[in-house]
Length: 205
Length: 173
View 1 (cartoon, chains in turn red, yellow):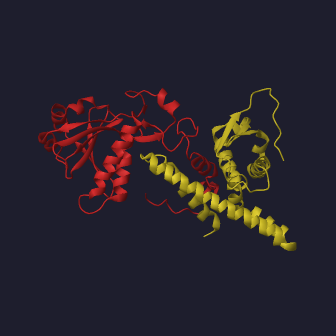
View 2: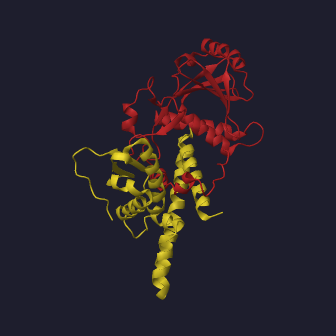
View 3: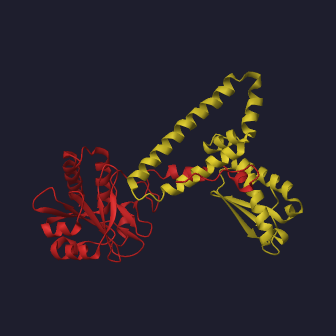
């Protein structure tokens, strides 16, 4: 973020600007609350995908239950996990620099690949041809719900593992990896984090 | 540099950061930031409350003058408002801001009145010259300035045109 321009005492806008008290109070008061209706939610709660804003909103089970999963500006992030395998050709199509990659599909059929790292995920748009290859070679890929689910490929195992996981679990995984990453390939914590996220997701489903 | 611009600059930065945080994609990061902000506010609020207690208990004969200075200083009084420690109720502070505005805008003052405070919004009725686009601009600037110093807990100003024939509410004083 660039610093705001230096204010001058004669600038009426600057003189008029007081502490944003209402905004501060609203921000702090929203802790532990559904970001859609304001009701309290527990530590484990579902999420809604804000498609235009590309953000996830914490929500209560009631709000989550009312949202559609496949259309509209706000969508319920589903809680299913589906696991399968992929072949080497599928992995080659992704051309990933690391052994773990997840892909999100948008409404327009564009796939974006994310590579987790200690500095947070690196993002790159996947060529259309690569996604087409994936659709042909990975049975799970055809089943992916755009905007709310991710296709995760894990090449550290043979055969390559493929999982459909909810997009909120992706954020969780990225957060854990950023926190616990060791060495060049992330070390054993990658396995632990992935196993934990998959187990949590399966329990919740 | 006077105090006000420095304070205004922090205010602008805080407002910008809060808006930016709402756009952070990861809900866990937003939740952690919310927790941090809320806890920091609590710690500061506790400390300020204790400070007021100490002024009251140990301030001796000077305590009235000290409190007066604290309440008239924009920076300290805004913090008391933030932590709901300000001894003057918000309605009264809004009325004081209206008095300030009336003094500032001259003859335009006859054409505005405080309707009510609703949530974080102050609703003001305007008519005649105050209801023209030019009148509204000048009035809004004066209102923002006065509310920022007397009632920084007001978030929005709404100017509504007075309905003909309806009795106007007097400006509170």
